[in-house]
Length: 115
Length: 112
Image (cartoon, rainbow over all chains, first blue to last red; front, side, top):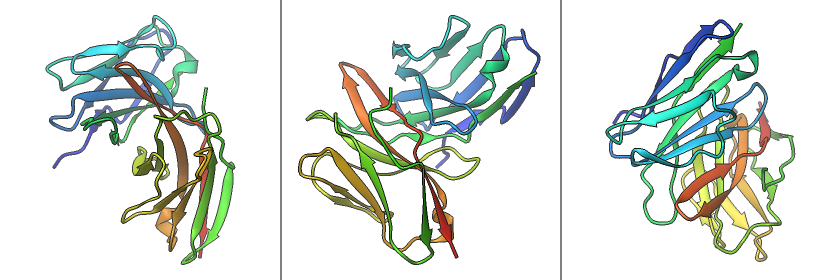
């Protein structure tokens, strides 16, 4: 079956512009995660969705970042007034959450470059 | 903050076992240890996880010490395709919040 997909794969934008990043999780996966990975760094948790609600937004770095999920499926991460420090690979993952443990399946990421 | 400590890099000869250590001395009783790997320019890939017993699957084995303060991921016969960054992660479960706290991982280079 299809895995997690993300679009666009690459995005170059000018400082100050808004961007939208899209994630299509694996069908039936109720949990969805967004991470940010700067060059040479580990993953930085941003936000987590259980269904369409986000019980944990603690990782969003500023109020310029927002995310939504609809139909317990597609999610969009929006960054307003982009800054150069926002340049990173943005990874989306989904999981089924069976019981108390789970596996996260990751998409290929969106590489965002803010010039 | 990351709750795990891993060496930044390791080398392994092709065909030999790769043993990747991880320290998680502050792990609590209901927290799992997860291992993922990330091949260059790809998203991370789940490898294995465990609570207190040793685990084995088709990819690797996970050895967890009795006090659960450290673990070792074993790739029994490393291949060039196993060259990747390996992340050891502790599952944080607070109420309905579930997230993995990622450190910098170990960059494993498998050499021919």
